[in-house]
Image (tube, rainbow, N blue to C red):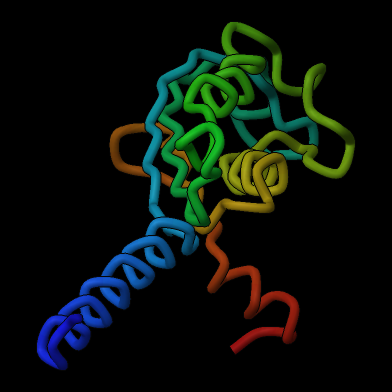
Length: 150
């Protein structure tokens, strides 16, 4: 026959095991960061200056993702899938590759393009057109846009 202390110790042990099992099955959230460089050409047809002519940029694309880890794959999203979305535009003429809602192909429109490609998990996109000029879209910017500013 077990003493009260032994029974209580078993209850505590069982409760700890149940707690660990619950924690193991809880959603685990993670943030991912991907940066990628691509080269692309474009022109801005209605721009009053040199950018209306075909020219190229070495673009740097930074993407932040957040969400629950898929318990089967152990990943939020395969890095390769994100890289492929970016790489589709590598060594292309952006005017010919982007859907019309993202034209003209400015850094701002590119940021929106990537943000919407990864909308489910994306929290922020930054597209660098040069070493000192970038455009950024984030869930905060998006919520301001949807509310009409400020």
